Length: 248
Length: 91
Image (cartoon, rainbow over all chains, first blue to last red; front, side, top):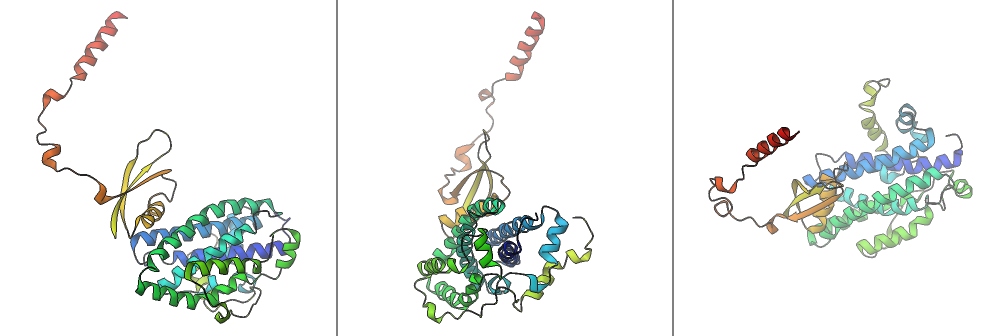
């Protein structure tokens, strides 16, 4: 699918890489999530995110699995376009739950930027993804509705919110090709345009946040990787690297 | 927490079938969990989520005090065999 410009590729990768890493992070909770039902639900949501990533990678390279693997797993770290929020490993469940909510609140807004894309395949993927995101958000809200109503749980969730919010700001850092991709009509607006409506959602969910105190890491246009990225990629490659030539 | 029983119905004329149970803190979480625990692969397209303590279960003595009631069974096989024999004779 060679009609994808380098700028379009950049914004597609930014989304695909976030989706892949978020899916990977979620699925690493399988077997250790706080209760069985949540274990299954959370891993399933992770699989949905991996599915979105696969569709976006496919939009770049076609449906050949070998090519998708090369793109999804064997790029140099500097060529990834993920953000620190999805690259960071969060060992605490409350941090992970808050990240799930924050990420999906933004992800839904992000898919809307692709709804009228000049690349029809992206518009199609966004319809499918948005139908799944409605459920992801309902899941996050259902858990938080219960947790925020109990003092002890509420304190832990709010502490996690304070810890994760600075990381979450990296979501709105656009890839280098973003301005050009907006001009081409691949996306309707830069990621920074999603930040204000996302903040309104956060305020509504958790109560008003003092945004002036949320210190976002320096913007890198998604060209630098968080320290947790390399070990995570190694975990992702653990099985694939047993034999790179095997047909699954 | 409460226990919920989950029933699924596939498209068409299939009836709802019991597929399992789960624990949840409230009705909304039960519905959300049921979808991810039991319908992840499109096993059905209609879902019943029923609180276990809402199920009426009369005791066994009431339901089946004695199974020995041959007069309640119709001998359909004997009649069917006779009808079949008659049809064969008429052909």
